[in-house]
Image (cartoon, rainbow, N blue to C red):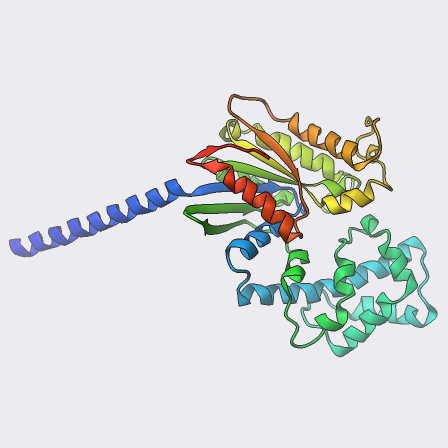
Length: 350
């Protein structure tokens, strides 16, 4: 009897040692791991940056993910046509006579969240997208919360409708799927282990941010610089740039982040360069009184964010313009950030 108990104790002691060893190894692994927290408001381009990391350091996307994007792309292009038809009605743009009944039928019969495109769907989309009224509506797509990638996908309707359609990397980078909850990507570059954490940017998701603050090495905050003239999906009276600035100001005041270095990525710079030629920055910042060009307007927006951060010894805040769908550009930016992290000490040098 006593021998049996003794053997049980020996087994238990052995199990405990194994658990302790595993715990020490996991802790050692976590201590070596560099954790970067990626934040930003909805539609800033955070998720696209995560996709770039998958392409660059994880070998791309798994079949399950590709299938998810295939369904999302097909669902979204059908929805884009609906938005454009309604935009025509609201703006007084008259469709060609032969398309008017078709448009009404399309609105009524095409169901939301159906991931397949029938042969009839394809014909209808192609015919409606070719209508001058819809093309005219697309030119003012900002006013109807229609993403600029709508044209990219609608122009590919023939290909997307094929039964064997498989989205390529460019398609996936352009496809918008909101981040819900916390998404992590872990990867290794040379001898360094990295952990990038992306938390949903929609208002309903931001309460989850604080749970990620305590053990990070760097905060990357993404701002869609081109959206200075747009309003939120959730609240049409709130300007997107104002929301982004307000959220950033509140975030950096958190005690866990007061000594953390920050990288600001001013994303969608390609769209900003074009938009700033047509739409003045004063629609967002009425007090702005400098030149209406990319350099001056971009600098003004950057300073708005940089001034929000309380200076502290050893803390750095740096800015960079990005286009998250440009893999080569993002590779350079990501590598600079990575190279700035050594032995647990952040030295941001770009």
